[in-house]
Image (cartoon, rainbow, N blue to C red; front, side, top):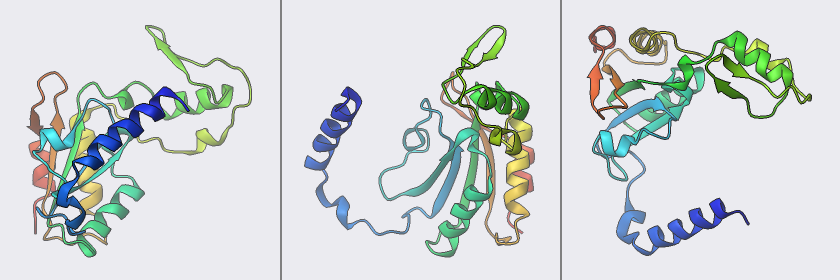
Length: 193
């Protein structure tokens, strides 16, 4: 067993010992909202949005992008579990700003090993065993944070499965200060109709 597995199981044991009545929390989020945000380990939506267990749905993926799967989750969140407001929250210093679709495709075609990055860009080990499948995926990379938040809010708003009365707010989390900074154009595009 790896040290990581041991650490996770030990932490879980301590958490479960103090679990209390959390097993009685209802399935729908108590504060009736959802957050779509990045998987970046520096972001803790529970802390930056003041959440406790049972408060809100948090959907995370690379970049916090409004992929088909993220929209699927948001639709389930409102249709079956009653959320009434949504946040799209990207962040500064995002890894999705460091590569393009072409770079990712090239890296995957060299090998499936972890790539490295330096001042000259991304590098693959070229150990072989790569795949060309990565060349056919839109990795939803980011070149401008505010623009990507706007695009994601618009993509969600324009989905035929999303009702017009759900407001969608657009923000960027500042990794240096912990503050949420509104993207006014995104929030305007996401206003309830």
